[in-house]
Image (tube, rainbow, N blue to C red):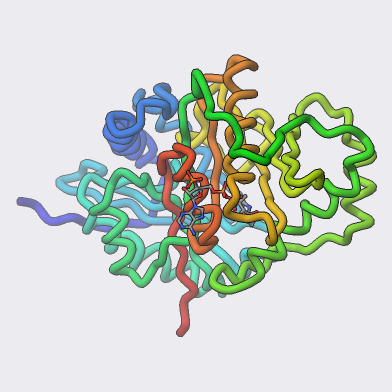
Length: 322
Ligand SMILES: CC(C)(COP(=O)(O)OP(=O)(O)OC[C@H]1O[C@@H](n2cnc3c(N)ncnc32)[C@H](O)[C@@H]1OP(=O)(O)O)[C@@H](O)C(=O)NCCC(=O)NCCS
């Protein structure tokens, strides 16, 4: 068989890359039919690759065999300081016919990223493809984050005994603001060690006061022994820029936030508010519910799979130089 050749990615590769992404997405939808069908079309997939290639400071590599594109890898930096000096590969930024090709592609693409001082690398992979994820583990990447999906349920179980779920009223705003800090506080600890920003209680209070009536967000609170111990927020998936291209099913709802006070964890409060968001998504006519979590967050990685979310994309991360 002719050998795989690696070249810098160029405009002429878009069509072939679109075909490889469409094939990956076809296999992805066999594993998870709730993903958006449109990207099985090589033209639509090619447009998504084009967007990845045209992002500011994008660069990458393409693999060909006998002149045919058999894989590609395109990364671009994200501006937020919390990602470090980075190159980020989005859901349409990488597809290969053979997993091992990913390692060849990274060797070429990462040379440039590291030459530019971009040493924090993030790659969103289709979770169904164990062999591909393993190929990236063999590049010293680790599983950092997970995207997941579920069908809007026809029925959700009632909250565990002693728990009440309801929509909040304005008088609950101090509790909502307090709970907002719970997620970054938890994720700053081992083993997540996230550097996500910790806003102040006063800022959070002011935001809740201003946005409380915003119809684009639907909030639930859960009470235990007369106290609010948890909250969750649902919205349309479009509100999250992290879910784009093949990772953004049409007409999907998003479980965008959830937190339970440390002393009330493990009682079923997280499940109760998570289920409330799913039931809201069903009633509002959404076709799926999406969420995401840090894989190193022991609590959320167990809770959301526990209530029925199935992995769709696996984000792997590597910090070069150690
Ligand atoms: C994630 C979080 C909201 C879950 O809420 P919770 O009240 O602790 O979780 P629940 O008691 O409802 O448990 C939900 C499911 O998680 C799983 N689970 C909970 N604890 C677990 C454990 N120690 N081991 C394994 N699975 C566990 C179970 O599947 C459980 O379902 P079950 O009740 O049928 O057994 C809560 O732990 C939290 O606030 N964590 C910190 C902030 C955060 O991570 N927010 C989510 C960001 S994506």
